[in-house]
Image (tube, rainbow, N blue to C red; front, top):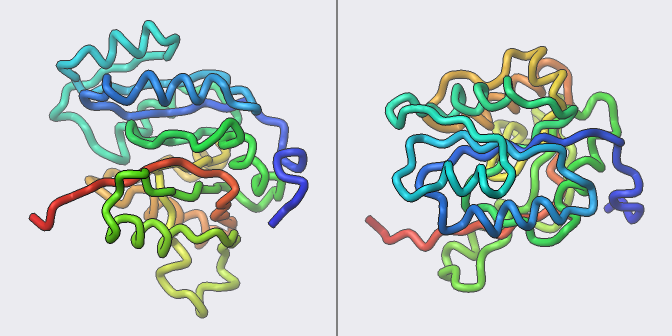
Length: 223
């Protein structure tokens, strides 16, 4: 692990993008945590799918740039592309409406691996919430260990499809490279892994950086 931490990060302006649907219950805490980051956020863009709980109005009150789309137009890849087109930061941080920064160093730590010119993207560790069920806690610890890894074509034979694992629950992508590759593909799911595979197959690197962390878990029933 880089003990210099955020001191070794690149200097970059940051745009945070959050797709939302009826997110009023979580949005204020997330925006509050993002505006208190040690590495400042330039703008927070909320792209809202016609919420009925006042999400869009709340986001505006909190100082976010708000975009709205019809609910039936939502697409995991294309919706994020629309928000990215409105972004002005050097680095795009994609988050979900239920991912809470674990501390005030999330954005700074996401930038640390991006100091390598060939590392195009990074993604954060996901920590289970205190009320998470055991199976959910195990899933987070298994998929998001406290060990960093930089993934590239060099490890493809060793790790296979796991090389492309990537998560937009909390990820950072250099905006110029995002544009270069045409953004996310139209997808109803896994737009993040599809983009990661394109990055790696194009010769770029993707970093999993557990020093950057969000609290994110679900207590789903078996059904």
